[in-house]
Length: 454
Image (tube, rainbow, N blue to C red):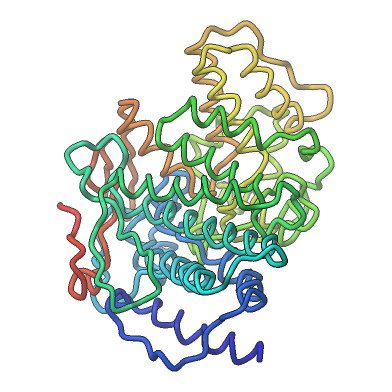
């Protein structure tokens, strides 16, 4: 029976892999999950819910690495290839994995939520029922946020505030999609997560399965991206329960091909394990870390040797993914929570408390007995410091693009990006329209989703 259920579900999900899936008609006779056990089985699919996240294009666009002309030519994913140059790809005659995989997760979550609505919640099944519902809502919120980070206009772009993402609340592919506004998009994401908070267990047992702590961590990330710093501060506190354990970077070898434990097993900082479907650009055979970024690490900073490898061309490749292999870690981790906590405390005027939180993290990143704590900084200097450390610690996680949108559209920091490829210069201005990626062409044709202006 399990094989039949999974096979039936794959038929439904394969519909989502086609860019015109928003209007495709699904066979109503196919077998789909119906019981709480079926839904738990689906939620245990790590490839679906903890792999293939929508992050390749924002990772490629986020200025953290460079590509030679020959390396760029070898890229096979068109979205990633064009995002690197900040050029549009309308995905005519090809698919957009960042779009498809996001809505694939949403479809699965909606199948579960619609199935739950047909099951009576009783005293006997209440605990399992609530866990299943909470996990489905978490995965839908996470996927919608990833999609919004690429295909919705940035918060703060008032001229284009009507351009959110299509909010799929039904598993019925005959439902024709339209764009929601940016405000509606984020309100829906937050509603799902706030409901998740009330449903999920506080116990954290498996970093592939969300818990209340996981929901709080994602809420902290999202509130930060929205510039809602007081809300981010309030919720990030609930991530810390006294049992969290930072890695000590001095315990890791610099000689390994990939520094951290394979698949995240044994990595005590991981709260939720998630990874991008593919980012060819950052594999050691192609990508090289931005040299300006490399100069930011002090000699006694262990991240310099644990995150990067000096290649024969005199440039550095990346080996520091928390996945323990060459993929992009897009999940939630304790180091990010420390940095959110520190930033929000500083923004709230609790400068030394924020620095104390930052010191607690950084002391574990440096060679033993070499780290000197930051104390007595004024607010702006402390904020600049924590934002710099955020860039140094959280690189190649798909977060830099989200931060750049926040810095430019909410805080007006006017950060301009520049790249050179094959002798040609490319520039992304601080409030460029290209901070919002175009919706795939087939979706535009087969739905009522309006294309973002260019």
